[in-house]
Length: 58
Image 1 (tube, one colour):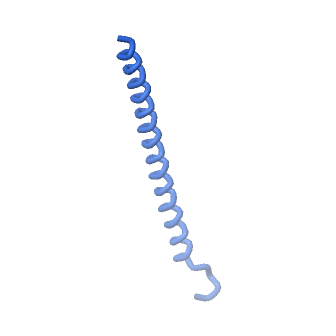
Image 2 (cartoon, one colour):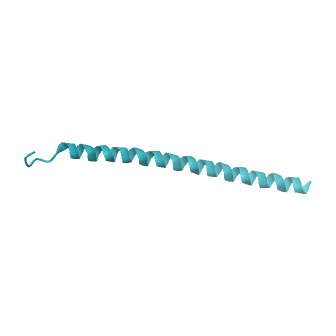
Image 3 (tube, helix red, strand yellow):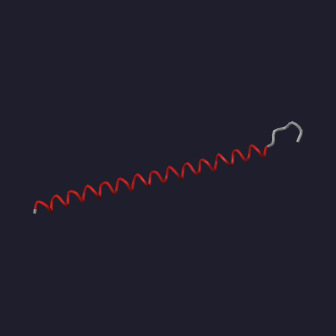
């Protein structure tokens, strides 16, 4: 190795950034799914409260 930059180091760095991007994508996907679940739970809870108020009026 005389004075030329190692391509191996560059490849490792590129490989790491690809893996990190994939991880970031996975995390974003999970966050989206969590947000969806929360929205569904929220809607279900509101529906339940409405149902209870209907029953309490009967």
